[in-house]
Length: 603
Image (cartoon, rainbow, N blue to C red; front, side, top):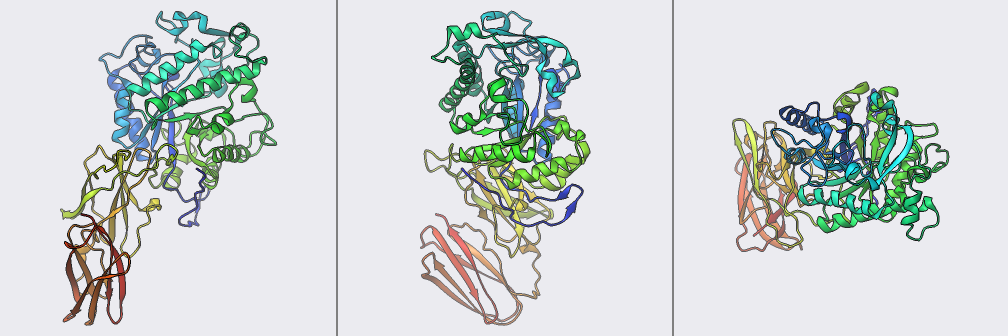
């Protein structure tokens, strides 16, 4: 789906990094939480510490208006979850193959805690990386149980050092990977991912850029090419096809297990040297054999996250690369969530990362960001960028963008919305809507809208989102700052398809002056209603008032005339017991005032 986000409101004021860009309502905001070498998590092998750290990470993401976490659960053919296929990770417990003690399942725990906070969790797999650091030391690890699947790629610089993630990784060492050319390896990897997708309530499957080694491959896979050529005569085309077969198989498998699970890939940020014009650098297409363009064009992935870890200008110009990738995603009707180099912010000027976020928001199909890694953003505040997110770019909540190719049917509307006042606070309560169609999803979250009296609700304006509440939480919302505002509640399904927003009456009714200085027709309450609603108004002068109620075709249902005997607050109750479900309009008219509003009768 091609989409362009336009600014709903124009903010023209200066902040330290430049002009503030208005935020969209739909935007993917995530951080990679790396477990390899314990980059982001866990900081200890102690279970209590691990749980507390995970809760702190999720709390931080939620408080900064992020909406997703990309959680590394398989860094090197090992597991941060209870698996019967691969051993427990050394980076989890300190010893490969040893379960947490006391036992818990980190993935199950992280999914549950993320969903409590309204965050998506995308399970991050490294597909081919095998023996790595302490990984691959036990008999149960695939490095030892299937040595015939292992490719040893020379004595090269450790790929990990290329990204400066861990200074201890700078030693020279062979690269050990699962052989992408073997059908048995592809079947094995699909089985690992299928096992997680079937057993855990994850929102997405995510894979990063470790396929063939960055250091390059010579003839180490020549024997596999000879044994399983699949009709190819060119080994380079064959290698790309090895990767493509895996991506296509994962796509098909996820559709069969749960078509609502999102599938995202994060390749190296340069597709081909010289594409687009002026770009130079490592060629992912010909060195690591990743063809992100094909993955998008074939629609095997739901989103692509190219790792655009460079600034504007130069041979890896962000200002060229990001729009080019976005154009490919737009033409394929898929999403681009940019991989942002949070770890490089301190190397750049203060304006660099804010400028990248602004360009993302101005670009078709660039619908969000994933930051590498959590310890940099939002776990730290390099050059004050986290402050900039909190105060400007992520000031308002956002929900993950819709994926209409997966599902376009909205969640059922909330029902029985009530408004009450207690202890100087307003409380909204509601009930889940009834699922009336077999293909309709239940509510996954509720959006609470809050906007000034006199304005019309705009559900595309994120400034009017007062809260995003998971459907698993109590269906209520409390606010002490309610004078002069109206409220509405809408339901969204898991893919952000939104119901009609059900509006309340004016929250300021308890504070209305008994000596009004102006005319006003307040929102009817309740609305929607069944079978009656109260229509309130205020009159500053003695005038005859006429109320009319018409149906959607303009046919008059009711006319009521009120001879005003004094100024002040007035009301009348409309009982629509004899009317059918539908939309109606009430109009107040006097000699000096005229106003209308919509009513929704639901039986």
